[in-house]
Length: 462
Image (tube, rainbow, N blue to C red):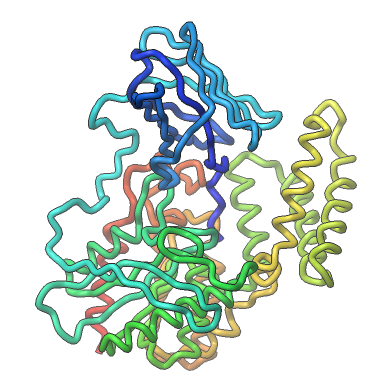
């Protein structure tokens, strides 16, 4: 549900260069589709010359090794031709003014010398030591896909018979903190809960951090649900009796999947989770985001019609190969409506068609698109707290909260609460309009009001 924020694949390789004036850390921001992506190059001296690493704070990437870099006559050249990325710049008065290139895209990038201790992103809610609670690094194996999951179990000191919450990330590979744009919302939640007497287990997704992929190379939400089910069973073996799930976005649909099938789960919190069929949700999402970007009513209608065609192919296709071919054909036909002078180069169009076809034909997306959360919510009879923000453009609050409420009523659930928080976005930040571009610009990681609501609700449960 969450948009994918990885705008570049940061597996970069640059090279050693010479010149003591270039040693240090250099920071800059790439402006991409209304979003600013900070990057930092750290340059150090070694016997054979210089070595460099790359940090991307907003993506949680740090100390990525760099190769193939030259620095001569104040000209810096970074070449990662294997992934079609280059940077060329000139060093003048402690600034490197240059161009970052990827494929046919060229973006201006100015690097400034980063001072010791300087931080590019201000995230005041990120927990800081000392911590007045216990943190245990844990691993366990999902017996279904045989993948190892790693995470952190945060527990209050000197507390017995306490509730424990498994946090479930949204779509896309996420680390245990659900880190995005320098924000670490799951760590903020774990820190807050532990201080109030609630234990928290947060996990790296498959293939991220300490968690491996196991033997399934094309997992869907159903596979991710088995990861969370394994986490619940792991906590039960450790002696926990009051186990709950709190899922954000896609995690908010995985939570009822697990809760409806595992009686060890005693309560559920949905954080901007879906309550209506995903195809309908995606149409609403597309419309809301496009409106924030200034799209006209005519554009919105055309986009809705195109999405309907693409989704029908994904839902009814027989093989991944056939879906890809049909998606490319539909998109190619749609591009004929655009004047040639407004189209990007042919090579860029081919890349776009290939990327779109690959994403829509992906087994995860096909499963996701066919998903109806009512199938699971309508079976959940344990306490449920469903939360959303009024400015959420990705999982629109009104429709999805109403859907969850309707399903829980169908289940004859006697203990649920549905709450819309005013002026909060999809990440539960206090926002102005709710656009994706705001996520990284807002310093607040997670609304304190939502933290208080969740913890007080959990602690009142019997």
